[in-house]
Length: 307
Image (cartoon, rainbow, N blue to C red; front, side, top):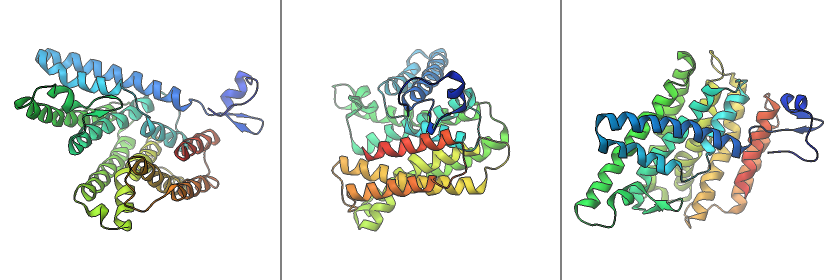
């Protein structure tokens, strides 16, 4: 939250501007908490729904609840929310449900990514396939892998359900879904380049894979999804261009930072590369004609990538 000095009057907070300072509300922490309320409530309802079909089926939803409760940055929901606000959207329960759909789809991606990496832990808790496998070998290993695939698939289906039942009209939902499907395509292509070894064939291929599997999926796609939900008609072209100009370099910076932290520098990127990309993203906002609170929030999110 961008705030300094004494608390300003409530009327000033509602306007979003105090003197030359812009107040960002909700803060990333507050927004993440609101998304979690939606997600947990939705998944608890799904657990009851599955248990009514068969008691053991509740495990499918329980594993998703366990992962959601293990934490996470909630970056994609935040960017979806602020893309919506940047396009003039009024904050209400609809956008929180749509934002939660982004996190649930991300949960699907994490489950399958952990399978591809054969990872046993994420966010300091067991991954789905490892948790369901337990300590036994043999058939339990196969069960853990098979169940994780099914749970991931179900998370993807439920992500669509969250968006479709968000309360937005058919036109904005169709446009948002078109953006969502582009996100999923780019993520799959980027992951394929990674697992096939193509991403390590050269710096250009590595940067492309980073942008596809992380950048567009993490930043640009959620921003554009949110913007499309803000009105019954298509979002303004100049705003969409500004969001893309902001999102593309920031998304790449986010993924490259992730790779460097994991010890993967095959693309040749460095901390200076990331800093230059974040600077380019911030510069794109300087000419954006948008809600000043949304612009301030996006700047704050960009600054977090520098850390």
